[in-house]
Length: 175
Image (cartoon, rainbow, N blue to C red):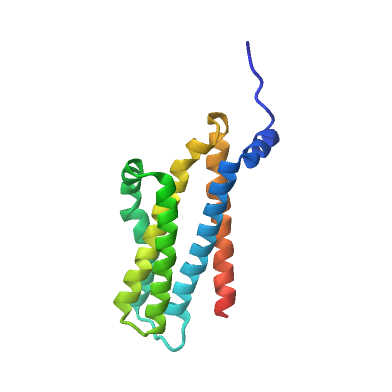
């Protein structure tokens, strides 16, 4: 017997009605929105701030802070996430990221040495990469297997839109 697959709209609608998926999606959107604000604010402070004369080393440091976590944390995130409870990783990771964001702001306001500021910013970005991996790894636990492909397509796509929106907000605030 051949079973008919529901229309794509019904699958998407059903996916959005699931409370587990909506919670994960909300966490992802807020996380990536704040990450967009953080990254654009970091770049704006280092590159476009008139009182901070940036050097090529500063620009390289900003790029390293933004890109290094994907290369360093990415390959090991799955192994660590398999050992820990994902719910705790998401909760504690976001709380730690919030605290590190405050530390980064305090270092900026306290005119700390650049290496301390960049190290704190790198930790914030690396922790966010770990959180995003945890969110992706949690999807199969809250979504039916038949909706997993749609959830895996929708979640990162909307997350990218949220990060870009956060970047726009960060740019507008900097102006």
